[in-house]
Image (tube, one colour):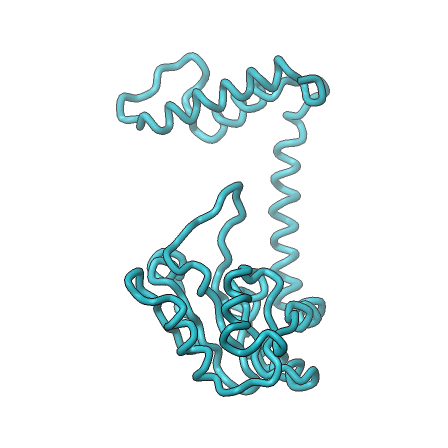
Length: 231
């Protein structure tokens, strides 16, 4: 467990030094660094929740953070409750009204910094609440903190490196020049406990898994038939 309170204390010092009264961060690595609220695993898509643009937290010097979260984010993507106040926006609520109420409860800040990963809709609504002339970019505040690693962070990075090295050692012997992707996929799927090629699946296997496997095989055949750069 990292010392999130100490990280926020350092952020408070940076905000005071830069003359920033409020910092708003969306769901991102910066927010996870300061609060422990995990960002979503990157994928080629987008999770869409009602009032999803409100998701994030307000930070002020020498004060606990104030989180604004859609109900479904709090229900499905918040396994551990972070320190600070949490305001839930339900599907039937007026998203902007709730967001504005929380934002105005912070007072009349002169400078409001906004994280680089904040949605455009969120930034526009922050401008409507505080005034666009008061907005500035804010990720650099957190970035400067993240550059300096604590002993606990260095140990966590070392554990991650060891995991990657072990995975590469296990995979490297299986990768051969000129080998086709489907053959590598079959070896990998068998090592993960999937049925070997040619074996019948259990009747209990879901149709979704069967469809996914069939789609993967079709993609593999296309990859072999049309090498990259020659389609």
